[in-house]
Image (cartoon, rainbow, N blue to C red):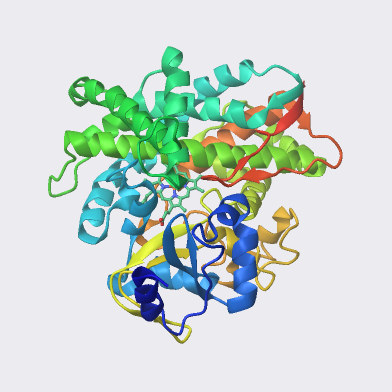
Length: 445
Ligand code: HEM
């Protein structure tokens, strides 16, 4: 055993766990099927265990109590700089990577860009983009839903966040985001030719070159209502504002956070609605009762069936399946002493499939969120697709607006299906995306 492993074993004395295969640990399994791996370890060791993957040794803290401990974070013992190990070089100083006093300040400033009137403005701005994008969808067999949603959400992001169409740059930008996000789980973190890591760093530079030159004009444009302009203007009551560098870092992180999570949710919603035509028709009928293809801000609350289906989709496929943290001090949990400076991971995706919380957890059953059942209320941290506590997703209402506005229009214009017996399989290299990008048969109504 080498010195590092001995030090590790001393620090984690009394905590169960296993190193996985020599050298690589559980890296390959955690990329192939992380939920099966975590489930197995939970069966064997319970809520706390250590593991090795991606060149790191860390602790899994699993289940709703662990979510509560880490996300509530009384005493500030869990730092979000745990994310640094994965995406620090790619998304430096994104809001999610900041901690404590600094995070509070940045979040307070950013909150201004997510207030009610701003959100209503974003929804109005995204409507024509959604219309134009869906008009390009060609009915027929084999339409790759994931690719189409990725393009659509990037275009929405470019217009609503940046205030311009991604247009000719769409492919390059899309590629840059994709590369930057994919690089998050690179094993080899050296910028060698042909590596994911190098492509990720190049993607990051391209994004910086996109935003920086646009900043002066954006600061000067008092009338612009896009999120970029909102961030330029955002000020706390005591006059604190973002620097140019902050704005670029936040914009890149925000565009990434909004783009991939919404794409994943829309793709999986379309998948479940194809598998369960009863739900597709129920949602379509509900959308028809609104009487217009453009969803208005005040109508969001009327789409109750769509809301159930969205929640269930976020349960079954949590777009951010694992949340890393670093302990700032020793913590006691379930009789174990977790030392300071340990990398820990909680898992919304794992919690969302626990049989003690959810009836037939693998089944698509949106009614489990309906009044009278509300399985999500069995524990305050049972359903956590948006995290919780001070880092809870700042864009959750934005995400909901975008997802519902797109789905509403899709339901009114098209119906879709997948072949009998088809099952989606996710690639877990970074966030979960369908390996085959979800081919569907699309029909115009
Ligand atoms: C279905 C859609 C979405 C899901 C499932 C999702 C999920 C999450 C999760 C789990 C976190 C917490 C991370 C942690 O605690 O470590 C988070 C944070 C964050 N999300 Fe989202 N997100 C979604 C959409 C969005 C959108 C649309 C935006 C931007 C418009 C956004 C921006 C952010 C930001 C800035 C943070 C960091 C907040 C902070 O640290 O204070 N997200 N999101």
